[in-house]
Length: 166
Figure 1 (cartoon, helix red, strand yellow):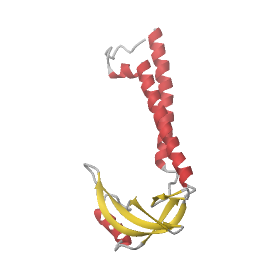
Figure 2 (cartoon, rainbow, N blue to C red):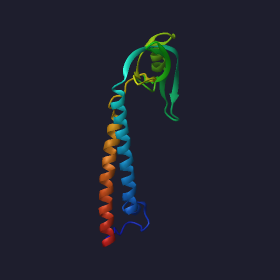
Figure 3 (cartoon, rainbow, N blue to C red):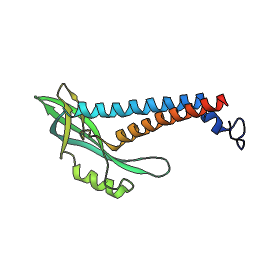
Figure 4 (cartoon, one colour):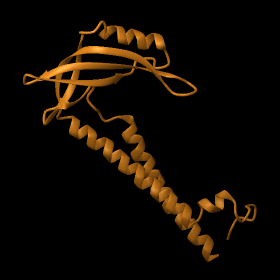
């Protein structure tokens, strides 16, 4: 039996329908897939090798439209088994909302030529990054969000099935 207080074509009724269940199911599958991808990256990059690179350039840039976040972008060069490579990485200052903190972080690596610890793929040394991937909060958030979406899809499907029978 449908709630008498809801309009027949309300957004709530659309969500508590087979289409709503399909939407939550799709969201759940996509977010769980993304979390597995993040965990996969961590497992692959855990085998990367650390070395030191020479910083060749750096800059501070801001991200965002309304509230700004500041990051540091560094370009660097490194050698593996006598062959030279170059790469680029982004670093986050302690306080990402402060351009002063970002400039202070940049000053640690410039003037150019300062050492930066990087990680590279031993099977493909031209692939490198400034920090090794670690299991992060984002992967866990996607996993939990995906599971919650799947549970919601199940509940919505049951409620909509019950509503159609009555």
